[in-house]
Amino acid sequence: MSTSIFAFIIVLGVLIFFHELGHFLMARFFGVGVEKFSLGFGPRLIGKTVGMTDYRVSLIPLGGYVKMVGEEPDTEIEPYLIPRSFTHKSVFKRFLIVAAGPMSNLLLAVVIFFLVFQTSGTYVLRPLVGEVDTSSVAARAGLQKDDLVVAIDGVDISSWEEMAAQISSSQGRSMSFVVERTGQRLTVDLVPELKTTQNLFGEDIERYVIGIRSAGDVIPRELSLVESVQMSVARTWEITELTVLSVVKLIQGKLPAATLGGPIKIAQMAGAQAREGVVNLLIFTAVISINLGILNFLPIPVLDGGHLMFFVIEMISRRPVSIKIREIAQQFGIFLLIMLMIFVIYNDIVNF
Image 1: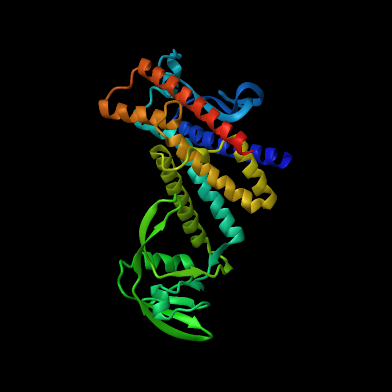
Image 2 (image 1 turned 135 degrees about the vertical axis):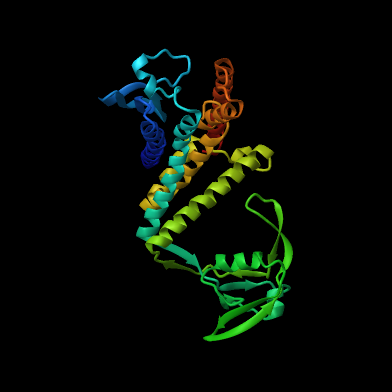
């Protein structure tokens, strides 16, 4: 339990720090004054004031904030502070300042993945056949267990994922497989067939298959600097896509709401990953950072996405959304977030 709590505090602290740092750095870049940079909410525990900014750690650790000069449109500020006021900046600059928070979480994920790939490399699932369905096109073409696929249509294959991607994009055309069997290379021609399978969300989808399963043979692979950068961006993009798709499926009701987890579940998972090692905890932190970034982009008032929505409306209508409408929307957003927090904590307790 102590490991879970400690890991949870570390992960949450890192994510909050980088999120707020994104807002802070972009605000300073555009000349906006920052009054407070806080990790946590509520009463100030410790801190230090540098210039006009109070850098502090506050009592309630579930979040953080950056308080900027003139952040509230109806706040009276001294005339000499107007050039440093958030509200007096162009809507485009305000948009970038707010968007910098969740974007920093996505960038943090890229950096973490890069560090993991550079220090630990990656693992590759070899294109080694484990099973061949007896009624499949692969069986009819002569593919056998323990065949190693080395090329398809003249393109070298180094992983199971590469092979699967080639088959899925075949559109049912004939393909030439070069396989290694007992030290010899053979050429096998076959035509993938369209079959109904299930995706990660249990939905029926149609894709081209040949009827083989992996042997599960995984080998380590070192990555160059360039490969680490490419894979870091690619992995962050893949998880971002999956996260966005999961949110869409939740809204559509195709993904059970019971799958949502809150702070207790995150603490449990963080503890489990910490016990597995630093690399596992880093990867977990990257995944949660992406989730936090996407969550904050949702167009819900109070969240960064809600502010961005108001800025987009302002760009289109050429005038800011009225304070009254913003206040009502923020009250609704707070209510929605409280209900969501109650629900996910309930899920946590039920599944604890």
